[in-house]
Image (cartoon, rainbow, N blue to C red; front, side):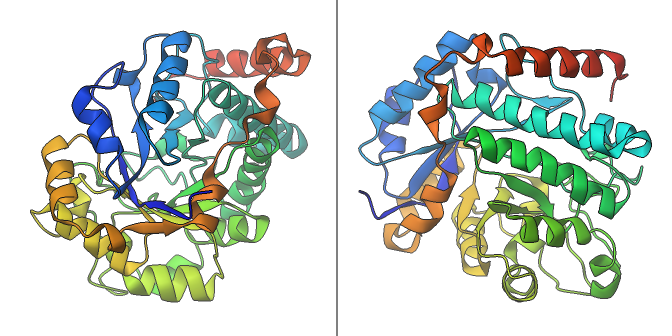
Length: 347
């Protein structure tokens, strides 16, 4: 069994692997692939692509995607159309037990559909708060109340785990209180650590206690806490996340090609800074030139993830040998979720 794999998660350009991408996948700094809508045409094609990725590589590889629901769902055709997570929050206001049951079933269904295609992990659930402030979070969040988010997100997470998929809470310590979108800007939040601790960070603390597998760090600067964005901050990742909150799982950076990660014009610098701060895995997407620069300049020995970390993210494919669409549970969950999605207005 392989002891370590590379820490860099890269993307692919199309529906199948190019010769260049085969070489990239076998670089010792690379450990995983994140797929986007451009990599998807049909379920059969996606399954072939996942097989190609694994066959092209000599070491194990993690394959992941963002399949949250709502407007963040990479694969739609041949998959169940998932609702915004805020739909469960709305139901929770009236009927908490039903909301949690539906969220659990949604996590399970989402995970079983991806696992059956060969994907290890969806980077979910979102643990941000829906305060009506953030332009990029909004209905991706379960609720505005932290204690409600804990209940619903734990149910969703448990559904994922039941199916055999690891979970990733994002975007630590909470993206719901900033207006700017860190994909295209550098958000700042002037609150103190005490204020954040009593609000946005509560769901992360709750899900850590509930057993979440991984946490993704936000590209937000809290100048009263640390001058660096969270994903590049030893204080946030080591002192707060690891020590105070006791998190022992995997830490992901968010995409280092985002504007909120622009601490340097050089991608290798961003990767090294994130790793030195405490990120186990770093994502670099939609920047092939930056990926190649990183692979050419980074020391492979400095970019390795230990076996206990990467195996915790591997999908358990043992439960998908029977077609999921023959399952009464899947049929029932799909019917409920499809109606919920159809009844909920747009973003």
